[in-house]
Image (cartoon, rainbow, N blue to C red; front, side, top):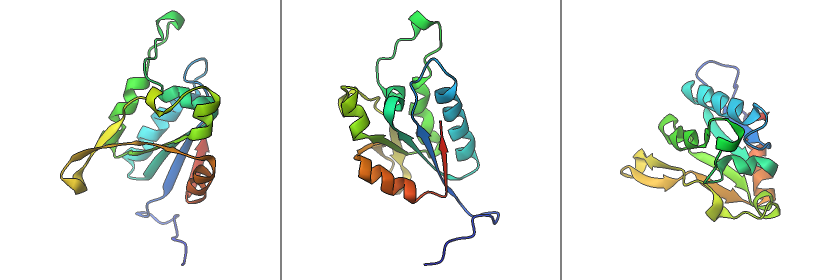
Length: 143
């Protein structure tokens, strides 16, 4: 199969934003989220991957009062409005940090192709599956 010429206008590229860092203490997590929203606004095929300490970005119950920063994790719930519906979390990263899928935010979207049924955006995948997903992307940006 011939690869599409993604340099041509009007061709949708697959962008994956890889989040590897904790949500607070640096600007990486917030900047990643902002770039994701920009990419989605330009009608690109956007997905997010959460690995290593990046899994903490979508853990529920974040309390940032003690560090004097705004908790931006609720913004992830708005991604479905921008047609960003593929959030992949590496299972091994969760397990290494003593977390499970139950510890993650409930992030959903309404599937217009399925009578607006509400569906989960988060998909917990094993490391080898994550590698396969990354191989399918045109562009990978790591934060």
